[in-house]
Amino acid sequence: MTFAHKLRTRWQQANTLLCVGLDPDPAKFPDRFVDDDDALFAFCRDIADATAEYACAFKPQIAYFAAHNDGEAQLQRLIAHINAEHPDVPVILDAKRGDIGSTAQQYACEAFERFGADAVTLNPYMGKDSADPFLAYNDRGCVFLCHTSNPGARDFQELLIDGAPLYQHVARSIAQDWNGDGNCALVVGATFPEELKIIRGIVGNMPLLIPGVGAQGGDVEAVVKNGQTTDSTGLMINSSRGILYASRGADYAEAAATAARELRDEINRYR
Image (cartoon, rainbow, N blue to C red; front, side, top):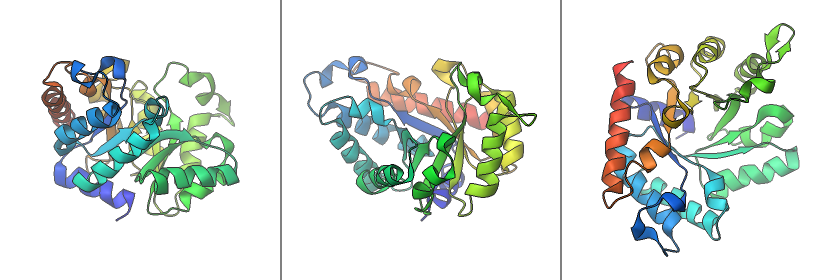
């Protein structure tokens, strides 16, 4: 099953547009994980197991694992666990890769073969030849940065080129020229709802990954109304900290499940 088909099936069968971000920070873990050498894996495993029924996707952020000794091995185990126990929920490796073709080939192998992710986030700045090694895995997803959620997004992404901002050129090129196998998606920040509406108009039904709700201040209602497709899907609305750290007590997994369910329900109210 391709990433695109897996995601669409999940949207419909689980009735959810919620993407659960897995950005583990040991400083915020419950006390039970102190001195646990497998804390990154164990904590994220528990969160994934508790929230899977509410998730249309999981999004582990590679830096939160790679910064620690044995972290990448724990990430590999985590994705293997999700693939085995929650095979209907796609995994997006948040790595934001982008490099020359030969290096990109190694990054593609890392994401799809070593880690076993269904999709990976990518930076399109170096052009299509840097994306081709990822696109060649046409059963996997390529999720390109378009208009990001951070305040500095305007520094370059809104620079005018031939009368239109750069992010619109990115959206149009990927939708029209890079998406021949239907395995592309875009990252669009919840903090820029008007730009989100414009991007949806450019790319049609292409999936959009939406960071920036919760801690970054993105408005759920504006995201859904400006970003959903005609069938009320098309979005992966990500929440990380609000779910991961809903509680730092012994009930951390149950609290995460509650936070995920509440956000899933809030999203669905506006669909």
